[in-house]
Image (cartoon, rainbow, N blue to C red; front, side, top):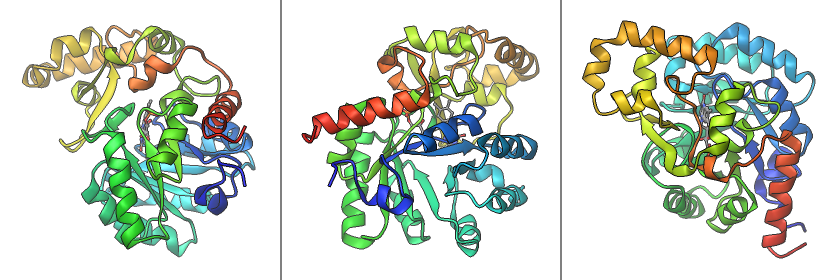
Length: 320
Ligand SMILES: Cc1cc2nc3c(=O)[nH]c(=O)nc-3n(C[C@H](O)[C@H](O)[C@H](O)COP(=O)(O)O)c2cc1C
């Protein structure tokens, strides 16, 4: 049996144990379909629940089987978005950042498996007991929102719990995985596969401003920071426990240690930030990417990224 054949590939009928992350604004149907076509499972980033956008991206994916993710707390006031996604019969519903219980029940009524991304051991146990088929243990290295645990300890801690208490539950690692070394290491830590965001964000199919890609290509992991300034600038009511990893820039430099000052100037700064996002002005708008920025040196088709990660992992794991 191939070293990359795991319980995850068997459950979802994949060639490689790799999911592409449902990244807000960046993971459209084209990226998700490319990853699925190449042997992984691609996830559309349904994020805050823009129904027209989600509809368009399912169309863009065509008849290719993809999954779709949402930011769980944002669905509290719009549960109809989850119904809309489930009507597309996705390969999986992906939930992150909030209590998944009610949505897991909803998905299971429609026979859709659920992937729950968690940031703490406590939330992993809760998601397991709510019946999620797959837990994604996300470390702080990750791009976008997350918390403070590191991938290297959270994954084996959750793996041990699953082994002793819920052996049917599957586990993926996320946060800082961008090449075959990361995939091989995740499998060694006890994961059945990985969820990769930043590396697929830097792909030809992702929906990302070219100036943000340029900024990430020259950055090392040192140039990233976890912060809340962009959520204040975007007027998004993220629960306080979650921050997002982005590239440091003039905006984080000015406001990261002065959130009260930013709140006092929110109207003006929100306008500046939004205009900068449209223009790809990376001095003001933040580039959402993880510490893996330091491992990304080229923008390539998603299929090429996936096969090179898998080839390298197979080589490292000793069967090629
Ligand atoms: C640009 C970007 C946007 C993201 N948006 C979301 C999102 O909308 N929902 C979500 O659950 N996770 C989101 N994430 C986090 C990913 O699900 C995943 O945990 C992370 O990308 C894994 O770490 P990596 O970036 O080091 O691969 C995002 C990540 C990035 C890089």
